[in-house]
Amino acid sequence: MNMKNFEIIDGVYSGPEAWDGDLDLRDYKDTLTSLGSLTEVRGGLVLKGCTSLVSLGSLKEVGGWTYLEDCTSLISLGSLTKVEGSLYLTGCTNIVSTGVLKEVLGWLSLEGCTSLTSLGGSLTKVGSCLWLGGKKIPLQEVQEKISYYSSLPLHEVMNALHMYEVQSVPLYKNILLQTLQGG
Image (tube, rainbow, N blue to C red):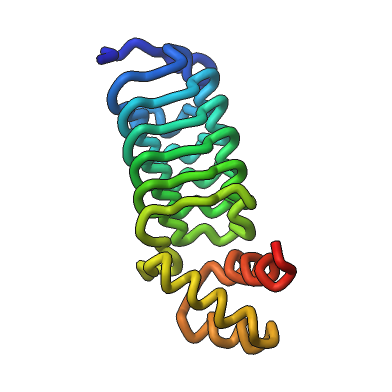
């Protein structure tokens, strides 16, 4: 297990490319801007409140829960493809897309991601549920709603989504449009 075997140099993580165990970088929340050459965390990753974080650098995989709540400068998940636990993006108000993310084996929390308009097209597996607009929505229910809504005119879909108090309407709209267009 790594002891504090890293540094933050000019806002960039500098240390082992693969981190064994949990990595908690909350102490650097005001200065950390990038995870640099870090490619894998073999445990949990905590970046909660890292408001200066702009990039996940080369990070591709996290072996546990991943807390990115309130990383308000983050706009992309970069190269991240797999999270073996839950992924919490709650309050990441500038994130636009989940990018190349393919698998989240736990929950995927997107509450308060007001700029999010796309799941990136690569996401193929989410554990048990999405968390949107303050509501836990079982994934099966989301898939059923998308199937149901895809048969309705778009203005009826948007009205129905507002009834469910979903804050991330642009994301749902994009998913529905992709579904309606067969992609």
